[in-house]
Length: 247
Image (cartoon, rainbow, N blue to C red; front, side):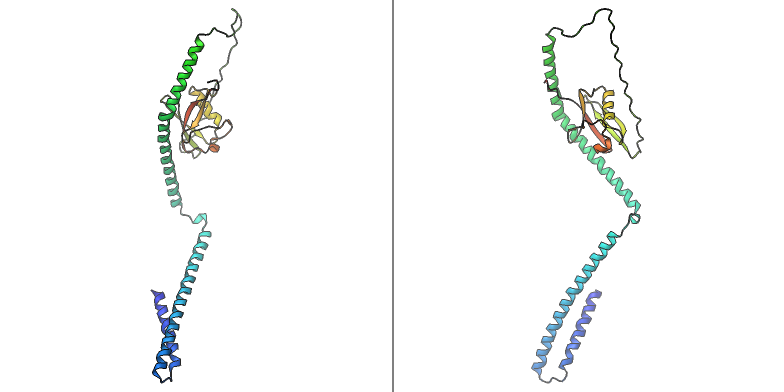
């Protein structure tokens, strides 16, 4: 509103200055023509000045916003807004993980379970063929010393606290209707996950762990950390039997 009054005053000043050359002119037609021409000139000056002024104001606002954005430091950020953003980010991550769980459950029922049943039937047929053959193993004499096989004891590291920022909750679906949940640290490795799978009764020589969605087997790198795997705070893994090349 203030800008409009300024331009009205400017237009009035231009009209007043334009009236100065008319002093002393007696002929009416010359006066009308001179007024018309000066009015058009004043209007053009007003329009051009408005455009220039508005352009300068727009450039000033952009420059001020750019300077304010680049000079804002971390100390000036409201910690309450940062905390609210972190909470919303974690809620969104949990919501996405729940969607992954539901998609993984659908994938399991539609594809994995029929595939496992077909594989089990194929192994049963192979086993039935093998049972008809003679024993070809190596025997031992009576009284000979039987080698003692020492079982390897697997110990897992302690679980981090739930409030630990590096804690990752891993749920393993064994494919038999049971899920096992345990917390790991981001510094734990793929070998730690395989050890946990072994404790559940699945030997790493025959089974492997796969992510839920997208379906992907964990890398064969025992020293790779969970942080490098880019797991979310809640991760679902599946136990999958390795494909036998002889099948």
